Image (cartoon, rainbow, N blue to C red; front, side, top):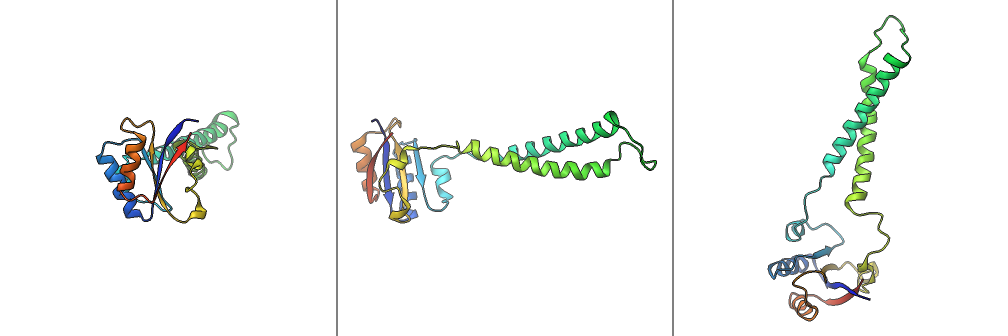
Length: 175
């Protein structure tokens, strides 16, 4: 099998952040970090782009609300107009309530699909699961992955650099 990269385990979040910063300063770009809880400092170090999910939710909500409003208008004004109680056919106040609820449903659905797409899910397999130290049974460690596709990657050199930066365990991951 081919090599996917090197996985380094660290004891605490500060060590992971320092190691990620050190590897970035050495020119490594194809890295990923794994932690039991979010570490905001890693976003800048790993150059994680800002999410576009809020825009997807907004577009999903507005689109669904507009479609439902248009459906109600069409069914009441064009398809089956019935004058009840002398009110105008296009009585917008009750239309807005239903369209608003549909907008909420559309926004939730767009958010759900957006999260799946942004995270590349469903993904049934990832090479990091081949790492023996990458389990919940081993405790709450912090991991830094250097991919073999990185232009600066040299197995022995990268392994020494990770060890110098405080890695407890450095193991090879097969693809």
